[in-house]
Image (cartoon, rainbow over all chains, first blue to last red; front, side, top):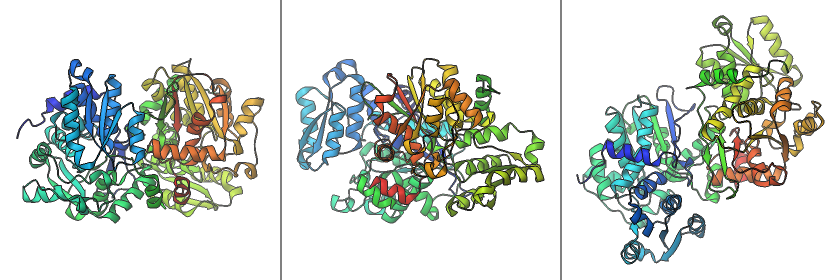
Amino acid sequence: MTNPVTLEDLRAAQKRIAGTAVRTPLLPSLHGDADRPLWLKPESLQPIGAFKIRGAYNAIAALTDAERSRGVVAHSSGNHAQAVAYAARLFGAKAVIVMPDTTPQVKIDATHALGAEVVIVTPERRDTAAGELAEEHGYAFVPPYDDARIIAGQGTAGLEITEDLPTVDTVLVPVSGGGLISGIAAAVKLTSPHTKVIGVEPELAADAAESFRTGVRTTWSTTQTYRTIADGLRTTSVGVLPFAHIQAYVDDIVTVTEDQIREAMRFLGLRARLVAEPAGAVATAAYLFREDVLPAGREHVAVVSGGNVDPALYAEVMA
Amino acid sequence: MTNPVTLEDLRAAQKRIAGTAVRTPLLPSLHGDADRPLWLKPESLQPIGAFKIRGAYNAIAALTDAERSRGVVAHSSGNHAQAVAYAARLFGAKAVIVMPDTTPQVKIDATHALGAEVVIVTPERRDTAAGELAEEHGYAFVPPYDDARIIAGQGTAGLEITEDLPTVDTVLVPVSGGGLISGIAAAVKLTSPHTKVIGVEPELAADAAESFRTGVRTTWSTTQTYRTIADGLRTTSVGVLPFAHIQAYVDDIVTVTEDQIREAMRFLGLRARLVAEPAGAVATAAYLFREDVLPAGREHVAVVSGGNVDPALYAEVMA
């Protein structure tokens, strides 16, 4: 594969993000099965509420001073926007975030509040507008997942998992564009080859599971992927570089239902005191409800990838 | 004062609890005031959902093998029960928990699930029953807060705060029986004398604030203290040894209203992705709403002491 992430890349990312990303603890759960103990990796506790800060900070830190001084640009309607804005601000760099005009005002405001300039475009213009701004102003483009620096940054969570629990048998990770699972799978396999890495997707947005099964990177329509409440996992296909990592390092990709996602959100709130967004709860849902399709193994880690949830949805799920 | 907790006691406790209590991270908040940055110390992420595991484990670890082999006894209707049950199980020791017959079934079940024997008594018999069981069976009594081993255990959270943020100006801590604030105040003042330690109570259960102001340890009635939604802070007076620590080490005790507690629970859920019980939210409430009575200072830490909240109440607060 082209430019796979190496252990050296991962360790360099780990040094760069130290003191910026929270080194989240592995939380032992009292509510797992006795013969399948469960730990949670709460990336929802990062300053912006999701793991995305790891990759964004690593990518921006890897730029030259000259590049950073011209500013960075990204496109996102979600957690990547805030991650890039936050990381750029830490470097005193200008950040321009392209957002589709369908983005909820609350997310636009949050990105503004982190000091970024927000450019609103039609959804069709989302990808091209960022590239044009980069071209025109010399901004460095910070991609959401299809990038080795991003993958290495997200993978630092995997290094922390095997450092804290070297005996872990199974690591469960949400899959959207594939940056998180690519990084974690590379980190886990390069430091603990016996450990299984399992991706988890909603049944209603299972493009990565299909791609994994068929060996062909597949795209689902937004009509399909927008059916799930897991708004963080509605990406219609994994990236090219992520798919290569998934094929090299991931053992399986399993799916969970909408009800299982809601149940897992309740479990995380009431049993682990963690507010998880739907996307952040899918790995826990797989632990709770999909033992039938998981590899045999004792010690399980479920990655809780984010906690930025709509208050009304959260109150409804918890009620 | 009799047997004040020393830095040596605190460090010994820190060694004992390593690997059992989670070393919770200090979480930087993006939503504090720019000139008063806020960090959260999420003790709600401990395995039993509250800081109590620190003190209970330290107290049981400090027993001799012979004492532990006879078993331990405690009385509690809340987090201390689960902390003692959990810690005893880790040592393979028998735990007997005396609970008043007013205890919700869910808390009885949770204590049972941790392997403890539960003895239900009338509320009047709560204190005496545990002593009688200790006498009759040779069990070691594990007090909830009026004990140097418990205070030293809870204080390990304070050591972690000054280790992680040596420049912290103000640490805000909930006050109930006083074990947590005693330990944290001793740890903070003995490692970072410039740092202010501020206790926080509900206005409706402000016995410690009154005691602090008058210099006399005061008892409020349960009719008074049971008015607050903060069920973890309804203790009617601080303990004797805690009061001595409070007088020696605490700079002030301030109060918050019921509405401020609810607002702080929402802030913690939506802005920090932490499920906090009402008692766990009072320190954050003081940061958010009581700047008028807090000492001038830049870097603030609010201790989120626990997250064991009734699901219906939580859904209502978040709605």
